[in-house]
Length: 80
Image 1 (tube, rainbow, N blue to C red):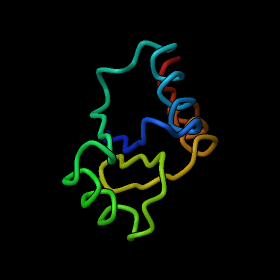
Image 2: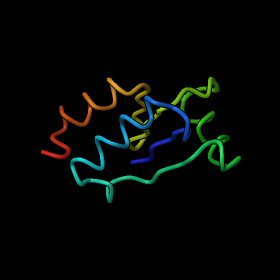
Image 3: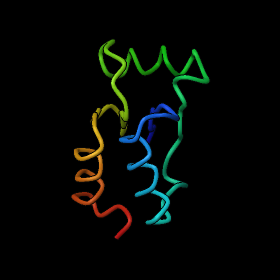
Image 4: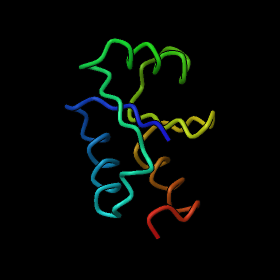
């Protein structure tokens, strides 16, 4: 799964903290869209060009926002 984030985004930090707390970081590739212009371009392609973060791309299923992403993890049993 690919997680696009900005280092200054509190919503992104919430998702990353959840991932760290549940010890599932190995399931993710993390992309800092501020530090990497290439990651920023990929984010635009994945989520339609608005640049919203946090953005999760799980093999084509795109989820935006901390609450929806965490709910998705919980529904899928990630970190259980």
